[in-house]
Each structure stands twice: as structure tokens, then as C-alpha cells.
Length: 418
Image (cartoon, rainbow, N blue to C red; front, side):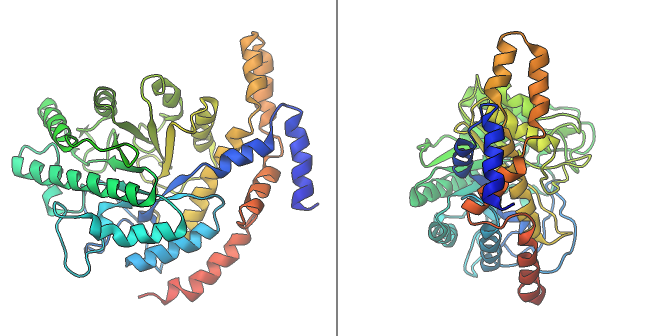
């Protein structure tokens, strides 16, 4: 049975439960995932360090062919993007500037250092998102940046944040799509602190100063990202969930939740509908922790499906931005991109195909056994046939056909890199 016939049969089965598969595919085609640049090079950046340092972040693995230049990152992403259905965004860290051989410190970066990325994104027809980089720097070596007790350190990072916000606004202006500017800091203690409050008061002061300049949200939006623990900050993180949630609620910035930044059994999915009544916009980092914030490649697993299902049930496609955050150097890095983004998109489609109206109707009329039965029935509907139809209409490989293309690229390109 060919792809079209399988899809027609699936469409009939979904229609019997009130699901319009054509409408679901249209919504999915307009759903961009912000794809992380740092999967290409294990978060090394382009400042010359060669590898990530500090910040409680650890990239592992030594699969050959890691990108080492902006050109190689762009080349690898362009190849991966062809294998992923849909049109997506590219997410840059500030440490991926192109300084043209004249290194500049992070409190001196300017839009011109990212013009190459902007021109490239325009050529691909995609948007850019941006991140301040508060790690892998001498002024972050003691584990504190915006909340440091040293004012000179705080001032340095405040200026970095200010400049990043202007760069993000420039990206939004140049590309005609608002650039999400995310701010995450690694500040915290490995062991039990005597004073938790002072650093948090300093962080409030630094953030307020950094956000003083008002920027049109049509150009860029600021997001603050929470974390509960990390390597080197197991006992205390200044920017905890409660801290940044309170900050977002009182300052009007976007609240970012990373699936790997919570307790191992804690899900961010349920938090989506808990926060949407109070916050106009959310940013989610879809990741896969394995016992800790280890940023494994995203899979089409229970947690990823739960996150996207909650967005669908809240009809939050225009209020919840989705980015991925993983970095695995132990496997082919391009395969990691393709697996992670295709899995995220599969979860979005799976959520869109849920017979929500029937399930809600059963709930509204008190027929709770019917609600449970419908939720279970949805699990075995022919989702795969609809996914294959999406890949076909987006001119992306169906099934595992992309594996051969990656293997060829590996042999012809990755293995020839020094």
C-alpha cells in the first residue's frame, strides 16, 4: 500500500472520531521548532576555546567530524534541515560570533559580528533566535555572573546582556520575525550556602538594569530560564524556578522552562496550562535528561508527547515557543539533530491528532469512563500514516530513508575534517 492510500485510510479512521487530519497537517507545517546550533560542535563556540568550560554543562563523546567553523556549522545544518519536515528556526549562542580574526570580549560584541548568520538565515528563509552566553569565560570561573558579589563582574555581564538584546533586535529587524532572546546563567554553589538571599537580590538588580532599554517585541522578546541544579551547583542555583517565575510575572518577560532543569520525576507539561492564565507567552526547551540535566537527544517518548499534548490541549501554538536543547558528541551529530527534531515534530502531530472534542465532551457530560476509553483508543490510531504524509508533502525523507543520506555525508564530508 502506497503512502497516499495509507493516508486516505488513516484520514477516514481519524474522521470517525472527529479529527481533521488535513487541518492537523496544516497546523504542523506552520509550527517552527528553534533548533540549537550547539549540537553541531558540542557547545564549543567560535571564540577559539575549542571546548566548553564551566557553567555546569558537560558535552561528552568524540564522534569524528565535529564542526569547527561557522561555515561547517551552517553546512551541517543545511544538510540536516533537508531531512527534517517543516520550516524551522536556528538558535544561536552569543559565543558563535564571527569576529573575522580580531577577537572581541563579550561586553564588546555588536550586530556586525552576527551579520554572516543573518545573511545565511535570510537565504534559507528561516528566523533566528539568540542566547546570552554566561559560561566558558574567565569572568564566570567562580560560578557567579549577574549575581556576583563583585560589581565589576556584574557590570561586565550586564553589558554583555545589553549588547545581546540589541543584536537580537537587529536579527528580528533584518529577518522580519521576532527573535527570542533567552537568558540563562549558571550562578550557584556546589555545597550548602550560608546566604541564599544576597545573590538573588543582586540578580534582580542586574536583570532590571540589563532590561532597562525598552525594545519592540516585534523585534525581540526576552526570556529568563530557570534551573534547579547543575554540575557545580548541586546545592543552590540563584535563578531557580520560583525566582524566575516571580521575575517573569512582575517584569513582563517570557518564562522559559527546560525539561532537563527539574527533578528527575517532575514534568514541565502540566506547568504549561498552570502558567498560561498568568503569562502571555512561554518558552519551552525540549530536552531529555537521563537522571540529571544531561541533554540527551529528544525522543518520541512519553514526556515529549506530554509536553506537546499540553500545548495542543491549551490551543497554545501561538503562545508557546518550542526550542530544543541537547548536545551529544557520542553519535553522528547530524543524526542527533534529525532524530531530535523529527521526534519533536512527531510529538506535535500526535498531539494534534488527539480526538480532543470527543474527549472533552465526555468530560463535560461526566462520562469519565468514555473519556478514558477515548484517550486509550487514540494511542493506536494510524498515526504513522499521517506522519509519512507530512514528510512527503514537505519533501523530507519518509521512514529511515534519511539514514543512507547521513551515512553518505559522513563519509564524504565529516570524516575528511581535521
